[in-house]
Image 1 (cartoon, rainbow, N blue to C red):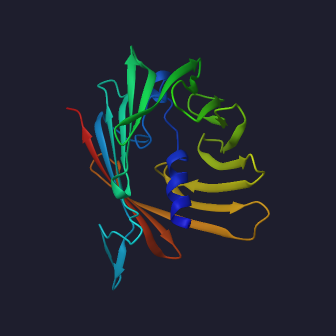
Image 2: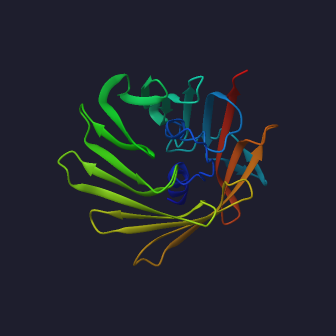
Length: 254
């Protein structure tokens, strides 16, 4: 359970300290392109739940429930995300492709195992991407509000019938680093994620708990970097033991 929580929350809790004036370009970045220096052609990510033998971590160990996945993101020559492909266990494949007009992503289509599942239109305000609404076969949609170029105030997810499924609220420090996220579900459950960043603006420690419950989870993050200072291996520790490794291959444009 801790691994699932840590893996999911790091997708949405990356530091956004890049104050680029090109708002649309910032909104068009992929899940894993935050904090990357240089022009990206593509990112390939492989997640491992490692097997520990005599203190050594063995990469590529596939545990019994098949918790193993790959993700591939490709980018345009202006840095906008063109596609995101997720390959999960048991050959599950989800792919999102974006249509770009000028320097904006204006729409997207999602496929599950090769079958079209939904179409979305992306709407912008003066701070960037504001809304993503389903047009075809979708059962939910989201709306986001910002207080700055890349600082989320809240992110609300609705069911197709219009009722709220969940709302996420975000808090920042004086430097614009995200330090807290609070999720409130339609059932009334409140989950809190508190974290701090290292000197490179990446998550260093994470604390998770559900309001009203006594259980609290902690996670520690460590990284290895390439010659440009971009991380290529991310390690998550639980009680001193590595529970997850994310390997990131970055392909740069010349």
